[in-house]
Image 1 (cartoon, rainbow, N blue to C red):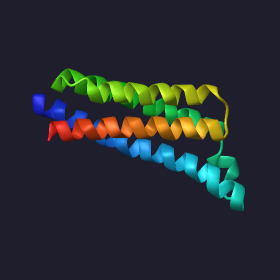
Image 2 (image 1 turned 180 degrees about the horizontal axis):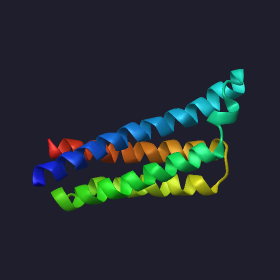
Image 3 (image 1 turned 180 degrees about the vertical axis):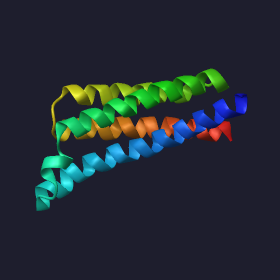
Length: 123
């Protein structure tokens, strides 16, 4: 049973890294491709996509980073992740645009790094 729980936690950390990358990619594409070539502006820059994606990333980050801290007792990844989650939450409140993208990319970068640290600790 314990091994199954650890496997799920590791998968969630891996999913967290993947989801963080998708968030960063979404922001970068929104800042670069849409203004330059008008590609997918309606769907890609929809505030709803951003809100749902960040909400999911925040939830996965909170659960996984919290479980990992309880498992291995290292608070550093959880604290780094908490800073990233705070930036992501702040991004939800600044409105769609460059400030939001910068906050999101910084936040997901910190969260991805925290997930990566958890995966290294588990190995």
